[in-house]
Length: 583
Ligand SMILES: *[C@@H]1O[C@H](CO)[C@@H](O)[C@H](O)[C@H]1NC(C)=O
Ligand SMILES: *[C@@H]1O[C@H](CO)[C@@H](O)[C@H](O)[C@H]1NC(C)=O
Ligand SMILES: *[C@@H]1O[C@H](CO)[C@@H](O)[C@H](O)[C@H]1NC(C)=O
Ligand SMILES: *[C@@H]1O[C@H](CO)[C@@H](O)[C@H](O)[C@H]1NC(C)=O
Ligand SMILES: *[C@@H]1O[C@H](CO)[C@@H](O)[C@H](O)[C@H]1NC(C)=O
Ligand SMILES: *[C@@H]1O[C@H](CO)[C@@H](O)[C@H](O)[C@H]1NC(C)=O
Ligand SMILES: *[C@@H]1O[C@H](CO)[C@@H](O)[C@H](O)[C@H]1NC(C)=O
Ligand SMILES: *[C@@H]1O[C@H](CO)[C@@H](O)[C@H](O)[C@H]1NC(C)=O
Ligand SMILES: *[C@@H]1O[C@H](CO)[C@@H](O)[C@H](O)[C@H]1NC(C)=O
Ligand SMILES: *[C@@H]1O[C@H](CO)[C@@H](O)[C@H](O)[C@H]1NC(C)=O
Ligand SMILES: [Cu+2]
Image (cartoon, rainbow, N blue to C red; front, top):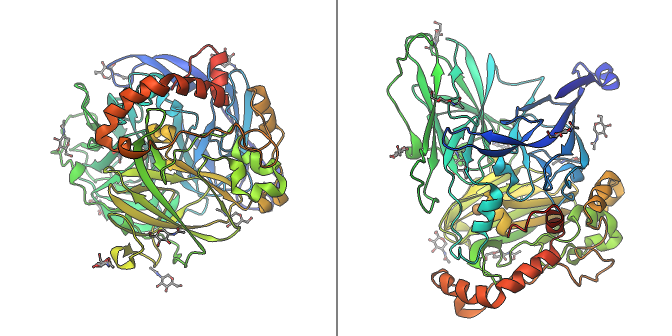
């Protein structure tokens, strides 16, 4: 599926052979996949294949993905961690930067590769990536600062036996007032229960480790070997020797591992799922998955297990970027409080600042490009889009207060951020309650915010466009744990033009391609999705969730269903395709 052509102009200008790398991607169902040897199911793959092979490009290339949607539901692809600087509409999240691609339609993604390291591409349409539409994206650096002999990619994922469609229905339900997440039936390494690796004595391997799970966090280690971290989320770090790493959904590492000089022993790599967030353990679930690394396949002598697992002392706050960038004082501070509550539709939802995110009727990027001066007004993005409009080049400080007892992974599109502080409890402005890290702090695009703790991150609003900030546990994103950062609509409108294809793809699905969050002009937002809010008074306490759910399901359950089918344009597409709404 990969066709590489030299970009003649670019190649002649530089020693780096910049290429236009084209992948034709026909998104298809693949029947009877059984990666855990427990149950066959249908997966979402590409060109009839699942698992989906990695996309590989080099810094300076142009990546082109010609997507054809052969599913009977919409789709949209997001290249996770790519800045998309100047190409906001190529970012992928449905109803944020584009309309989802309706069945039988095509969309071309094309963008410049300006970063290097370990990335991945996944569906950003409802729970679809957990049905299998996720794959590694490795970007090579022609001026690689580290030396190694070979590269390997290791993906860690959780695997469900039911489709996300079925799981979302169970999760987003008045019968699930506590918000218990669907629990995966398996953990997989490289989407396969039987994967094996081979090491050649003496060689140095760069292992790209990607957590492509939708829910589970993993601890990763290799018996008998230490790992030297050199990259995290596309940012080079000073080498740091560790026994294990932990990775929440969507985080990535590159580690260098030096092979032993002898072949008399083989070793296992370990990926242990952190099961603390699982409400129950499926009987067949093996949370501790392994894959053999063979120095010799002539024998089965394995080194004794040294599974570091949840005993890991790894802390990503200790990582030091290779290229020093000290933090600077912010121009603007934004407080986001993370919580889960039963809302007026009877569902348990994740939310920032007590208001769950609801998709607008027009993708916010289309709104930004079509609203002229009004695009600077936060209101046009909708009453429940949790939008913040940033001034070009402001240094933004985000304070993330997590009221929930569990840790959550938060991902910012279009940027990396500096992790400048954290602490336990709620940040109340008392600076001595923070463990600060201002001198060359770690940089990432996905951060784990501890349960009942807070993290403080900073980034420069230097990338005009609409960027979603959300929990990467897909269940929580779907229920509303998201906010939008709209950077410099004035600069975006001056510098860029929304390609016609990104208007056509909306019209193709019957969604308006211009206008405010209600699909209207000016500040008339009547009809914009809103009204799913906290339940007033005593009902909100989690202990009363069950009671709230039974009353509310009777009172407004029906109303909520009607509301949804009227207000979610993407849902309308699904209904026309003969599938009932999934919430
Ligand atoms: C895409 O896959 C579908 C299902 O396998 C097939 O019917 C269709 O011909 C393919 N289309 C292209 C453009 O390859
Ligand atoms: C992508 O790279 C090409 C070649 O360097 C350049 O002409 C073009 O402006 C870049 N596009 C964006 C959106 O930055
Ligand atoms: C994995 O190995 C088992 C036992 O050897 C075998 O039955 C199964 O077919 C293999 N599965 C895959 C996906 O290769
Ligand atoms: C991957 O992310 C999930 C979700 O945050 C987490 O439960 C799992 O432990 C992570 N895996 C690794 C190897 O860190
Ligand atoms: C392997 O042998 C080389 C050369 O003797 C030595 O420098 C290196 O440290 C050895 N590697 C390991 C992992 O023991
Ligand atoms: C998985 O490994 C952890 C150590 O990380 C251990 O505590 C736990 O008992 C193991 N679970 C199973 C089911 O083997
Ligand atoms: C980073 O650079 C700043 C200013 O240039 C310097 O003060 C600081 O010591 C450097 N930090 C590290 C960790 O190298
Ligand atoms: C954020 O919260 C802190 C602590 O409550 C407060 O001091 C600060 O003023 C808040 N910032 C904004 C912009 O509301
Ligand atoms: C601020 O935090 C420090 C460290 O946790 C604590 O000792 C101090 O009492 C706090 N100050 C106030 C005013 O709460
Ligand atoms: C985006 O590009 C501008 C120059 O056009 C640059 O100043 C800025 O740092 C870039 N931002 C990111 C996140 O790549
Ligand atoms: Cu979450």
